[in-house]
Length: 187
Ligand SMILES: [Zn+2]
Image 1 (spheres, rainbow, N blue to C red):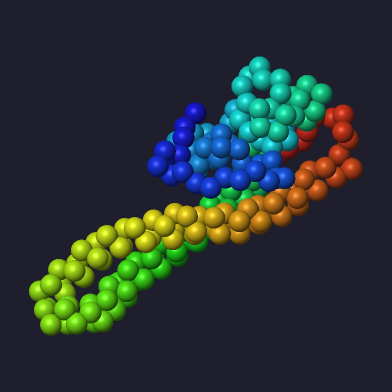
Image 2 (image 1 turned 180 degrees about the vertical axis):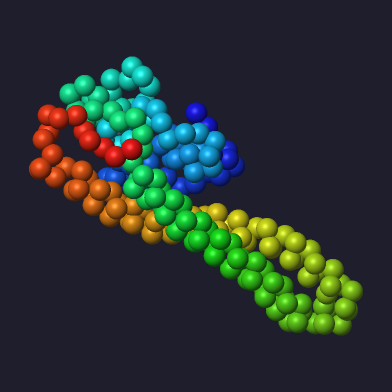
């Protein structure tokens, strides 16, 4: 099993949508990078990777014997849903981080122009601005991007994921497919 970058700790609230447990996300990321084939044993409900002998999904508690039969690959549609979720999230994180750099640059100039001491001393003004920018362009993007961008981005992205999941479930559970037949999930 592979894991995301351990520094990449992201906001993960619980909601009513069961897909994308951490282990499923790790699997999809590894598949996308080409470091792992999209094959194994997965919960037939939420597609979390499960062991050969797992009887109950650790993520959504689906019983693999009486509930949906496990599948041997994650459906391609869901790979796409996760890619989209991550793209939306990173767009928000990066935009907020960039905003942090702009704020650091602009407020630094404002301070230098505002304080008489700096206006009179080009050397001190330059030194102050250099240090201010060095610190500000690290701290502000981390706060804005890593905190606010992450939360807002997650909410936006998750809303799309929930909608995609609801659509997927509606299609998957259409009455034309007999319940007793083993699930005919696309690989
Ligand atoms: Zn499950």
